[in-house]
Image (cartoon, rainbow, N blue to C red; front, side):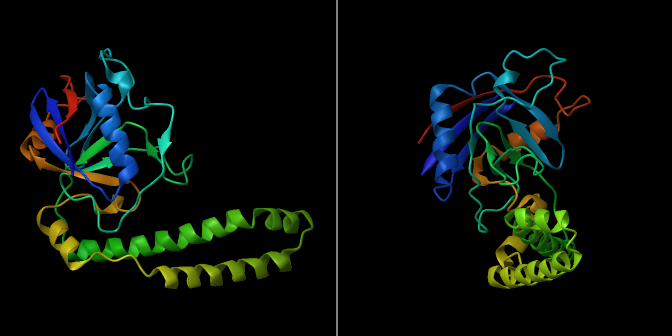
Length: 246
C-alpha cells in the first residue's frame, strides 16, 4: 500500500494511492520521488468542487501567469473502476477535454482532490439517468467513428437510403451494447457516501480516481476556502511538496 505526504503552506495531507490503478499510482510515486511536485502550487481552487495542482509551470509563477497547461510530455491511459468514486477526499487525475481527448487519458502530472457537496437521493437518481444517456451517446459516437469511411462513401454517392439503414443498424448495435454493459447505477454504499460525505458524482467514469485522503481532510477544506482571483487561482499561493512515506 503506497502513501504520500503532501505538505502544504496550510498543513499536511496524507494520501493513500490505490493498487487498482497501477499506472496512475506508479507515475505519481515516480514524480514524487523525483521531487517533481516540490514548489508547485494548488493553482485552481473551486469551493465545493475541488482543489487542483501538479502543474510544473506553477513553480515560481508570477501572479499574472496563466496556469493549468503544464506537465510532462506524456499522458496516462484512463483506469476507470466503478468501485472508485469521486467522494470527498478522492484523489483524481486532471485531463484535457473530450473534444481533444476522447479516450479520456489523464495528465501526466496534474491532479485534484475532491471537496464537492452532499447530494439528495433524488438528485443521484437523476444523475443515473443522465449517465445512461451519456453511455448511449458514447457508444453510438464510437460506432460512427468505426464506420466513418462507409458513411463518407454513402454521403459522396448521395446514398440517403443507405445512410438511413446504417443509422438504424448503429442504433440497434448501440442498444445491444448498452444492454450488455448494463445501465450505470450507484451502489447502496456509494449512495450512502454521496448523500452523507458528499463528492462530485458527475465526474465518475470520466476522470480516473486513483487515491484518497487518509489524514488532513481539514487541510483540504482550508485550501478550498482560500480567497481566489478570476481564473480560480488563490490570491495567496498555496505551495506544496510531495514525498513518499510508504
